[in-house]
Length: 300
Image 1 (cartoon, rainbow, N blue to C red):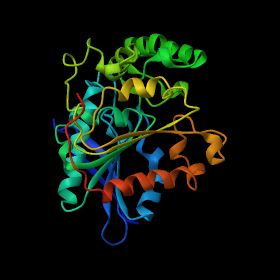
Image 2 (spheres, helix red, strand yellow):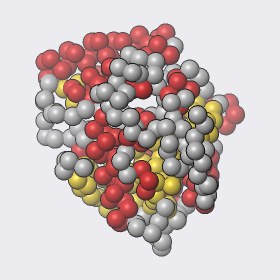
Image 3 (tube, rainbow, N blue to C red):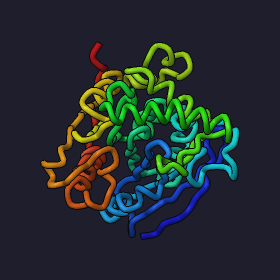
């Protein structure tokens, strides 16, 4: 399967590193895979190639300040988490629309990669959105042990790294990839509120309202019952703020149901899920690709 590297200019011109995977022949549709916070695009490679084997073109890419989209030094690199949804995601979609103008475009969001789609000014170009582990990031919804780890990260690792190094140095601690200090600060602020960035402190003030109240495409959300982050409290806390003009379906995935030891926050993308969870994700994309949604006004 052909794979090509690209530099996509974000809406403000910042270069984003991307990898485009294309099947032989004409693709059925194009999938923009928006990764989770500080997760390299390479993590999604096996899942992306599975989609390509099934006829989809897939774009893997890194947000500004992460992976191959990071500058040579992150010290004092100016970036907010909001930039990912308002400047980076829409630029990738524009690139895919220009490259494949006659094909349906679908978004697949992991965690934060599904949260910010509603900020995209060009989301009318999308035919559907599939999410995994997308929820409010409020630490109060997490189990006690994970909540303590989250507090240690946000109130220890973040301020110390930002003060000493000018960025949040998480890689050397084995937590996640390093991120710009502005990204970590904004993420910490959002995670301090049950409604995340929908909280009145942020929504319509420090973040735009976007089009979360009227997404013009169907949405399918998967979450795992053993996920300490996206769980039975945090998933509805996020999606109660979102409306689709077509449909919005949320489905819980139990590891036991699929003969898996665990799924957690990342398991859908691991090779161990190839025979179990990957077909479910593929079926959701297929449904959206083939659907001809009849738009209706959201419920008041």
